[in-house]
Length: 172
Image (tube, rainbow, N blue to C red; front, side, top):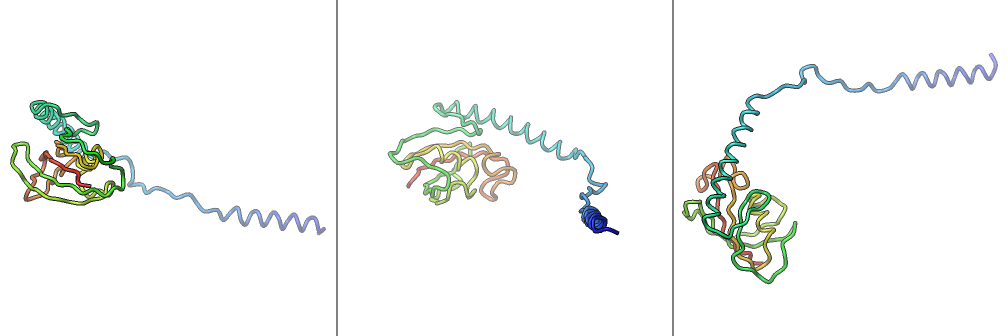
């Protein structure tokens, strides 16, 4: 054999060896097909209907109190007193004085709290509402259950599927 033949044989062997050792593509298990969960579909439909019903109820309530605006997220708000401070942004530390009420007017809780915007330390609706405020502002937010405490509530104070009225004063 000539040198050229030996080199060619060596190169072909090398290519064959490394091309045959390719890692196979992963295969999906046969039991992972597309499966429709009818329970999930039913629950989503029920929650959608509950949301529509709640929105209609809150619209009626907010319109009876006048001067409330609806946020694109779905909660209602009214700035009662404008402060002179700067606006609130993500990662801002907020100190608030807060009064929680049911739609019936019953006071559930009065508290002062501190939280960081964006850390999900408060209900989504409250956090988004505070972002509309400036330091020193006072506001009222009507937060639907799906942006507040949801299907579970916060027992024993807040039952499941309960919308909340927040009276907020942004302290810092």
